[in-house]
Image 1: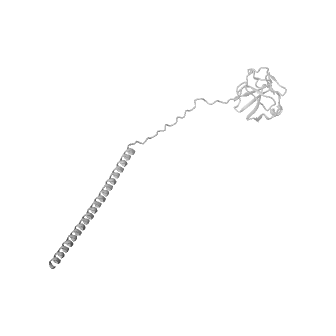
Image 2 (image 1 turned 120 degrees about the horizontal axis):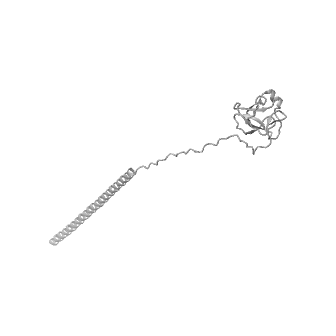
Image 3 (image 1 turned 90 degrees about the vertical axis):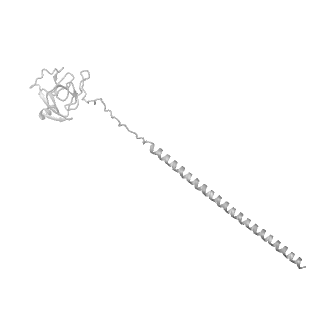
Length: 209
């Protein structure tokens, strides 16, 4: 009986030993698996970090290359300067039209109409000088200067004593107006220039006083 009990205890101890060994082995395996998984996770994480770092470097390098290319293009492109040619002003070659007082020819001359005189012949004779319409009006007599060379067609003295032509224009002398010019006078009728030799601002009336 004792031998049997001893054998039974030995067997129990052997079984327990086997179980303990199995448990220890299983525990060691799990620890190794955990360690392996940790290593694998570390490797994966390290790989991902390495990949991200490499990607970041590539992006930075690409950005630097793009920046360099853009800088070179901007630097190499010349600045276009637009030159504005000055506008040449062409001066007109046409001479200004000179305004002259109108002249009347013999064909244009008509008999002057008698209008109201601003100065009578007697008053003008006594005054000697009259200022009217921008002119200085004076008189000179044919009794002093006969004027035979004046070539006055139809020459005659009217009722007031003014020497007139055939169209009844009073005969005038002027150095500013050309011969043949017909102008108004303050003596009741128009006059016509037949003579010269007086001052530039003066019109001399030919009379028979």
